[in-house]
Length: 430
Image (cartoon, rainbow, N blue to C red):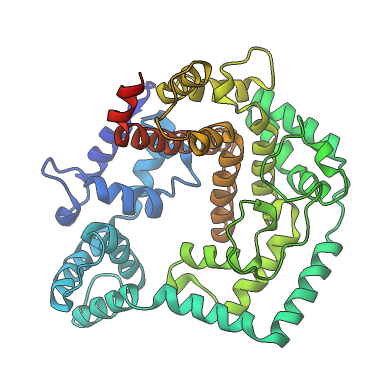
C-alpha cells in the first residue's frame, strides 16, 4: 500500500481480512468478509463509518486505507470472538425455534456485542447466547418504551419535567453571535470546504446561535431564502411538549421529548442505555440547545443543511449562479436523476407522472429540501446520542452528500414502484 493512488476499498478490506485467523464463519467463499459482515459489524461497529465517512468511500486515499487497516487489525481478537459467538447464536436460534428476522442481520451485531462483553465464549456460552436472544427477541425495546411511558404518565413527574423543560428552554444562553454572523460563517465554510474553515465554524457555536434565533418572532428571516423547511409550525420555534398524542407531524424542532427518547431507545443497545430518567434528562438538555442538538459541532452541521436546503430544488432543474456552489452541485446530482427528468417532462406536458392522481408524489418531489433536512436531523441526533463527531471538512461534506443521496434514492424507489404498479394504465394514456 505504498502507492499514492487511491485504492479500492473492497480490495483493502479483503487484504486485511485474510490476515485475521478464526473468522471463517464471517467470511465469503473468496476469503474476504461477507457483505453482511461489512454492513453489520465492520462499518458501523469497528470502523464507525458514520463518524468517519472517509473510511466508507469506494476509493480510499492511502492514509484512509492505512487507518482502516490499523483499526481492523487492532480489533482482530474481538472479531475472532465474534465469529465464535455467532456460531453459538445460530445454534441457539434453532434450539429456541426463533425465526424472526434475518439470521445475519440479527446475530452478527449481537455476536459482536457478546464478544465485547465476554471475550471468547466459555463453558456457559450456550446459556449466555440463549439469554441474549431471548432479550433481543423478547421485550427489550418494548420494556424500555414501557418504562418511558409509565415514567411520563405520572402526573407529578410530568409536571416537574414540563417546568424543567420550560426553564431550560428560556434560560439557554445567548452565544454572542448574531444570526447574520452565523450565516456568514456558514457561507465561508461552504465556499471553501476546508478543515481550517470547519474548525473556525465548529468553534463558533454558529449552529446553536442560528437555532436559538428561530425561537424569536421573525427568526425565520435569518434563514437565507426564508423557505418552509418543516422546522416549526409558526414563524418561531415553540417549546416542544413533553409528549403529544398521535404525533406524526414533520416539524423537526417541535418534536416531543417522548418521541425523541423513543428514538434514543431504538439507537442504543440495551446495555448502552442508562435509566429512563437519565435518558429523559439528557434529551431535555438537547431540546433546550439550538436546533435540538446538544453538541455544538452537530448543531452547526444541521445549520449548514439549513443554509444549503433552499437550493435543493431538483424539479426546477439545474439553476446557474443561485446559492452556494456546493449546494448547486448537490442539486445538480439529483436533478440529473432519471426519475426527476421524467417527472419534469410529465409536469410540463399532458402525460401524468402516474395515471392516478400525482399529488402525493409531486409534493414529495417539490419538498425535497424538507425531506433532506428531516433525514439530516435524525442522523445528527443519532450522532449526538452516541457522542460521535465529524473529524473534519471531508466528513461534514460526506455526511451532507450522503443524506442528499439517500433522500434521492428513497424518492426514486417510490416513483419506480408507482410506475411499475400502474404501467398498464400509463401506457393506455400515453
